[in-house]
Image (cartoon, rainbow, N blue to C red; front, side, top):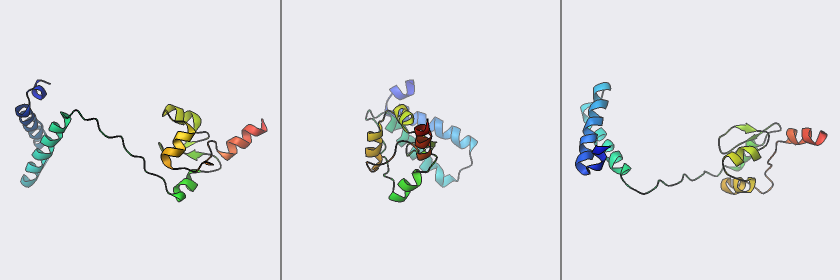
Length: 125
């Protein structure tokens, strides 16, 4: 950590250490070393910036993906791609409500929050 606190000279020294360690264990063409040095130095100097990384923008699913996410036995989550009988518990772990989920992924207002077979099973009880 002392190296990071020394400024630009520290970044150069740290870059040299990282690149030499990488090159000693990996085969590179001589022309690739300059690119590796530049990329490593850019990454290290970027770490010193105090700006927070931007939050990833969620891709809106296509109508076909929305249709495929609704199956009789489960709903496929757009958050993690896993099937769920009900989305409520899953979404609460992600800090979202069903309304926020619909808005975030551009889903229609009538998008179900429970799989059809699970709803029928619960209705029968």
